[in-house]
Length: 211
Length: 176
Image 1 (cartoon, each protein chain N blue to C red):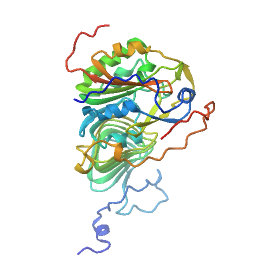
Image 2: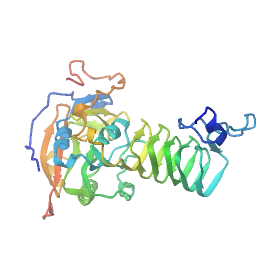
Image 3: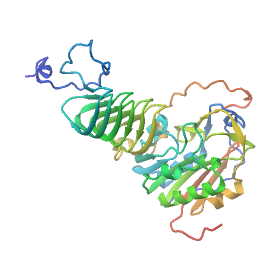
Image 4: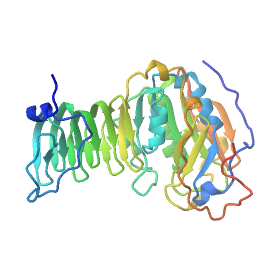
């Protein structure tokens, strides 16, 4: 399996620091997404789980190589993460998946909810499969999970579901890797606009990941 | 030998896209021609299996299954289907709880709300569609299967972004 360097880039060359939090639409380079795609998990014919809403561009993009795409939108009508009811929304989702797009969902859950979701992801991710997630690390983040529209294998459009921002980060950076119990963080990229992208790979066998 | 009008005489629908559904009452419209899609009107509820040999537009409610493998099935904006649908092409503008199978394609329009699994070689989801479920497209064709995606992808048209107050012009959104 191809391995990635763990990168603490500090900043990438793209993006600004405020618009995502203040409600603008903007496009950013995404080295993490590119890395997730480059992994063997995103091979032709793979199974992909997208935890965001069904966006035409994403369906189109992912269907170019995935043979199965599951879409489980965990947001409510108003765009808020369904922090209480997400389990029900995932009841019909059957793994295993080679690639799971978590986007910025974890930033919108409390710690226990995030741990529970990661635990569920561990149960549906194929060993060696990848997670791609983004954590807001700036002082503010959008009040609702963003809509992430894939524009290319290293380009993502951020679209706010609703205007407004809240204080961030809800999950301190130091906790994220520990929270991803059962996954190994293969790469992380801190982008200039205050978002850190993670690529984590499901470990081949469960070890003791108690915190 | 094929002659123009053959299909009309035999009642075989053409292969064009589903036609717009007529109004609900149907009182002032001409009799339905053999090439038009059959319509299940908004006041109709069907519980059971629907099969047939012509295109179908569902404006009403169906609970059961809809199987029209060789024909187009469309669920209109008022349509509510609690059933699996199997057609040549399946287009949804309304609400479906059930699996969708399209021999050629499945299209979810922007007003659609679908919960179920989709199986089709081509799936189109319009912006605004609400979908939860799985999409099975089968193995990609060899031509497109060399290696993912976007490296060869045509640049997508970026929708017009609204004005972004508070964003410093000195800090760009996208730099290539």
